[in-house]
Length: 218
Ligand code: G6P
Ligand code: MG
Image 1 (cartoon, helix red, strand yellow):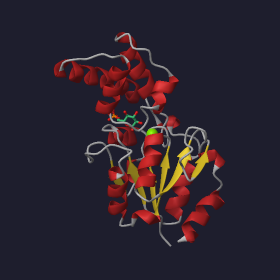
Image 2 (image 1 turned 180 degrees about the vertical axis):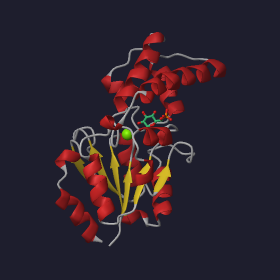
Image 3 (image 1 turned 90 degrees about the horizontal axis):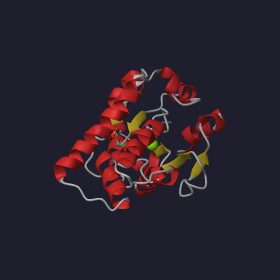
């Protein structure tokens, strides 16, 4: 029995959500726009362009197109400086246990991320080969909560959406999975990810039997 297992990247596979946070915070600070955890939560799963639009909106700041693009570039360079120093230690707890269990059980595995840096990051932590399909920010035109990224991942895996399971740490991503008729599993805070079908604090909280059950269910 095969299902489609689709993983978000930032904050699910690797601990890069904090680097996005640090890079956006530095940028917001430089513009005199206040930026904390609450604001950050709303940027998780959100594309680079849309994230900057939101930050500028919060600060009531309007910029020329050129300056806007310059800031996108500054944020990404700042972010990439963190990424360069990354290694396998930054794979989140028990992610490798889960991936190898799914591999052993011959389950199709995809990445579904809004990030344009996804392949760079997967290479950095030596996980690129684990994914049968990688759909990232360079393959989609509609951002989460639109289900496009996950629908493309499902298609790539040769699975109908109803047979797919999505792991997400963002509200936008859970909404995207739900909108695509997939089973949504939140990784993080249950009060934030309350629209998910299931929520776990992290992968250490998901017993192997949970995955066996998912595999035998359909
Ligand atoms: C993920 C992260 C977001 C990030 C987006 C774009 O969805 O959760 O915080 O803004 O990817 O990432 P990028 O690496 O292309 O700037
Ligand atoms: Mg994420």
